[in-house]
Image (cartoon, rainbow, N blue to C red; front, side, top):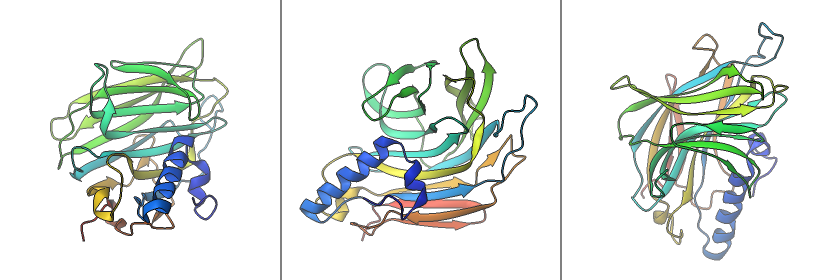
Length: 265
């Protein structure tokens, strides 16, 4: 498992590092394993807002799932961010997420580590075992070829803390779906000057050959902050190293960044 060679991995939630460990363990047995795809972003240092708190008030981006993986393979496409003086958050779309009725299927998900509480139209619950925090999940029947606008933003204050919300907008229909709202300690600031988009194969049949990874192709748009008023200074795309199955790649052009995993030979 790579720890410091890619600086972004030092920020990864525990569950991602665990997933990488599992991939490496299987690779030791079979010399195969999925290779994750990442695009890392560095932002201008955010100025204080009106109350003197540092950090951005929102991040937004577009996601188009161009090729969904096989039905028995679970993928997660996410934008991971950091809250200043706080912890990690992510928001994105999954193929085989747990839905409120207990079934598995397409969902939108929003999570913050070390948060204080959550509410939303679907699942709103604490998680533990691989770090602790709160998450919200809604069933979301995304369709390949459509762009979805994902947004995380500071939505209010309560007696308990600061509230952050996430939404997903279907750019074809214009419909906006709330994913949920999560409360964090008041001492936390806004969104920090680093983030990363990634593709992760998190479940599915054991990878005995590289063809077992299951092909996924998505395109992210370059993210913006504070309603589109701020753009990142620079970005860096890469795949995890070592590449047990070297059939992943990231390509970028014109503000769009395609991440592919399990590319057929």
